Length: 261
Image (spheres, helix red, strand yellow):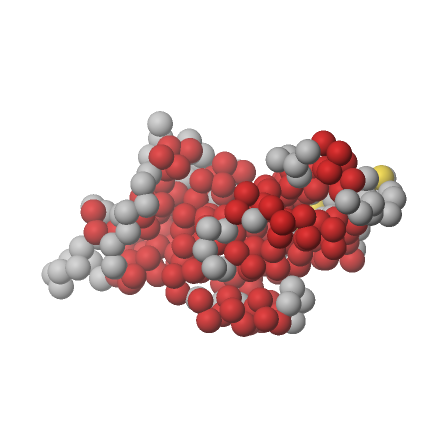
């Protein structure tokens, strides 16, 4: 088990008052220097880490100043969050929690406006950047962090953001993400993340997921729909899969009209 920068960040966000690298007394290093020091440690040490952090209990203190700083570190180092399990073990615990803790009004405005490119402007600037990023890992971060919203009253945001991404790739079937600025052909990690979030949302409200797929499955890729329907009966899942899109030689083919239940 390797202790790396993202383990330190996640641990500090979950348990800020017990974090050894921080102190509130006046005779210690200021907050900004802590950010620089831990950010430097992150850049130097981060290679990979096991999903050990997922075993942490959510035991929050009231120290929101620390959480703001930790989120700032995380967002400054997304280029090092370059593996699916790094993203999946940390994005919702840090950025998802940060979103619902500090940006409730922004979330409400976004839901009312709808999942359009213009509505993205209503979200906090850091989340706007992730949503509009063409980087593969930042795009996945923008999706996976939604897991934190699902058990809350903000779950509508998860559907809206998923639809934003679905619409984006539907509007431009040749659109590809990049890794370190280089186009990456496969979008599987994005479509799987979308399906994962939708599937988890469906556990809280199966009828809402069914409604969403009735309305939007024909624009989603098969990978997304396959993941989203894993807990549905086979006949029901197949009806949605039959209308989903599949990439063929860089293009997208729409298969069949949706069959009503």
